[in-house]
Amino acid sequence: MNQYFLNEVKVLHADPMFAACLEKLFHCPKQDRFLKLLEILNQPFYDLTHSDKQQIIEVFFSQPELKENRYLYMEYLNVQGNTCLLKDFIKIEMNSSCNRARSWALVYELVVKANNGELSKSALSNKVISFEPNSKDMHLLLCILNMLSVFQIGEYEAFFKVSNAILPEINYIEDSFIKQSYHLRLLELYSYSHLLANKVEPCRDIIHMILQLGDAKMYPIAYINSYHVLAHTFLFTSYETCIENLQKAYRITTLLPEERRAQKQKELHNTEQFVRSFWKRDLEPLPDDDAELAHRYIAMGEMEQAISILDQLRQQQGFFTPFQWYYYGLATNNKDHFIKARKEFESNGDKFFVKILDLVYSSI
Image 1 (cartoon, rainbow, N blue to C red):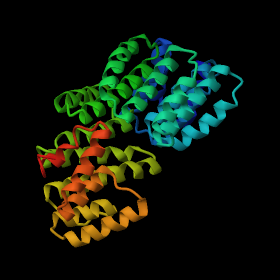
Image 2: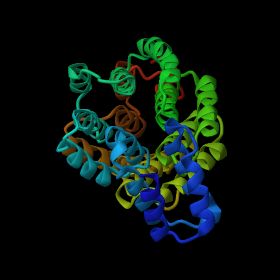
Image 3: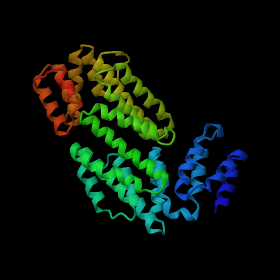
Image 4: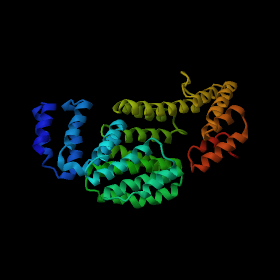
């Protein structure tokens, strides 16, 4: 079957040096082959397009002996941000004759819903608990998803305790790609939780670990998120470093499929607009997002326009986010609005962004 793979790849990419490199792949231990394949595909001198890489990976997983291990492909699509292909492949695996494949498809269906924010905090936890893992790898992924639900609730101290117990389990994963990918997942969550717990220096240390452990071409989502979080750690201390890290994240979005690229670019753009208004720097052009437009008008001293936008926004949404209460407080100079913002930040367990209120009223 190795020969089948090599023959199919030769049809897709005729370079004999590339074929020779792939032949060495099958001298590696089985648990290292997929990660090695990804490393080969990302070598710049082979000049492979994204479509070339995708086709070669699909051929790799079409080998019958990998029938029970196609969850590696689902994890790959997930870290690549390719939600559409992942959903399609989940449907295929749902109809597999292999019980293990169907179980993994159900887990990755849950991963997609968690990524898209389709589940409430309690719903995610309940769904995770309902699964019975059939392997160490599945058990660890379910633990990571459960940690995500703990993180979303804002119970960061509980999160730290659980993550410290789970991190050593990474060492018992056999497949090199899954080991690296799940490790990055855990570190990502760890960095978020340290940021919101206002543990800035440890957060930066964790992000530097992520950037050294992985590769942007292989794990673009992890890299984008890491630079985004790193930017936040400089929110109160360095405008230039904050913007620089957002721009690094923005450049990596070019590696994503169109739909996910647009989503991530919007997130980064909104953060950048927030930072510009917060520091009152580079205030033109105006933001597209309504809340950030109000924030920009506040930075420009045009309070009436800001209040009008925020009143309309509250009417449309039916509520204010903590940040929007903060903006409303700035625009109206009403201490009660800052108090509401503080209560909401604190109810979410957020000890980092609540500091913006300390810059306004230290007594709140």
